[in-house]
Structures are given as structure tokens and as C-alpha cells.
Length: 365
Image (cartoon, rainbow, N blue to C red; front, top):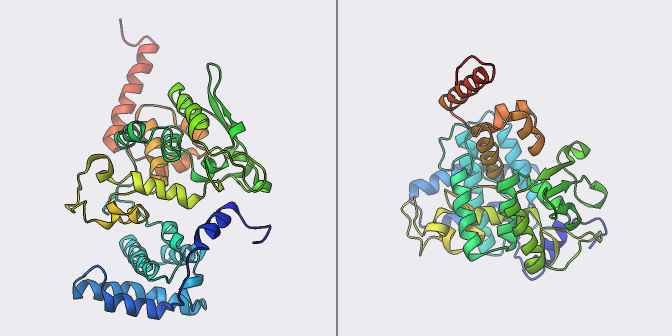
């Protein structure tokens, strides 16, 4: 283990040292998957899967990937980036990445890829909302999730992490960067302090420009105090820092945070009902947390941030305030995050204009 290994890499190595992988070429993986048909797909579906996976097999050939045992998340992301940068339709890109995740899940089941690889595949959403997944976790959805966690998993690592994402709109990189010393819970103004510390393993998105203080509610402060007192493992990371969100190995990995969000955004977890008509007692995405990403309704961490920003705009928080709090420009908010309908925007503008006219004496009491 080299001195330059990141904490994520160390955690994954510790978790995967127990797994004995059998050599598996990309071509053999595809052939075995199609022959075994583990999900009992129709012949038409298998034909579609073969078509969607052939570009990945060619990509492996072009990049000298001969054994999937050695495939890592960065390589999968490189392939996904190549798809996104092509002229393919969004729906085609999404279906290819989703089908690749099915193939790699099969490869994992036959000890052909590292178990953690599946958690690093981020299946894209569609910008027009035409896909099965919504583009954000709404305020109602996050309230439902947090109410359930507060009742059944209070102050757990997952509860605390998702609560921070839901209340502050944090990126995963920002959440991971927090140390215990960055949490200030005393007094009338509880807050977090985000610091860019690239030399000790936590670089913020916009480097020093991402450094800021973030106010939190007293309820959030109380949850954090209980987490620190009762649940947080007494650990340091490889640099001697005390990470706020931690596992017994040290600072939590990005893949674990993604897994938490995929797990708890499954509707059946909080309601026992499946909006897709599946039998939850037999659905692999429900019965196995590591396969939660395969639920059509589960969502990635970024959708919590998108939902938070949209909710703040919908309740008339100025975009300048949202921009500062979430470390994102107003231009990017307008282009990529604001999910309000045109009617909602019109109604809000009308209310603001009326309020301005009242303030300037245009309306009588």
C-alpha cells in the first residue's frame, strides 16, 4: 500500500482484500451474461443488451483492458464521458450505461470485478425528465426520508449525512471535507466551516473559492451533537484529521455516500409500496442494499442538491443567497438547477412586484 493512496482507495482495498477474483475478459463476460441470462430476459431484450454492450467491448479493446478484474471506477467514468461527449441521444447514453451496470453486476456475482465497482456507476438522468428517474429529490421526498431515518435510524451516519445534504445542498466533496473542528454548535448561530485542504486529501470543487461558512438550523445542530456524542466512530484519517462523517476505517468514501443516497431514495424503503409494480419481497434492488441503484426511482446524491436549490428558489430566497450558500454561480443555477416551471416563476415575479409596490406606497393599507 503506497503512501500516496487516498482514503477511498485504502477503504476499498481493505474491503476487497477478502475477495478472490477469477480472470474475466470483457468478451467472455458478455458471452457468459448472454448465455446465462440471469434476469430471464426475453430474446429481444438480450439482443438489445448485446447491441448496447458491444461499444463497451470495443472500448476495452482500444484501451488494452483484457481482464475485468483490473477495471476501476475511473475507467468506467472515462467510457461514460466518451458516450456523453458523442452525438448519441441522451436516452441512448443512459441505456448503454444502465445496461453496462447490469453486465458488471453479473460479473461481480461470478467474482469477475471488484464488488465496489457497481457503486461508482452514476446512471445519468434525462434533462427533459423523460426517463424513469426524476431529476431531483423534492422537498417532500427529503422530508419523508428524514422523518423515517429520524424514527428508525436516528443520528446514524446515513441519517446525518443525508440530513446535511438536504439542509445545506452540499456536494459530496464538501460533505467529505468536513472535520469535527469545522462544526460549531454552541450559541445562537450554529454553523459549519468549509475549508479547502488539498494537501491532506480533501479538495473542494472550486478550491479556495469554495471556502465558506454555512448556517444550520438548531434541529440540525442537535442531530449533529447526538451523532458526535453517540454514533461517530472515534477515528482519524490517514493525515491525522478527525473527519466529521466517518466509518470505522476513517473518512467516509464517496462511494459509500452514494450508496446511502441510492438506498434511502428507494420509495419502497419508507412506504413498502413500489411505484413500478414490483414485488418488494422479490425485487433485488429492494432486498440488497448494494443493488439499490438498480431501482428505477432511486436517485444519486446530486439530485438532493438540485432539489434543495430548487426548493430555496421556489420559496423566494434570492439567487445570490443560494449561489453563495451552495457555491454555484447564478448562471449555472439558472441553466442547470432551477427546476421551477415557467408558471411558478411568473407567479413569484408577480408576488415580488406586488410586494415592491406596497413597500413604495403604490397600494393603500
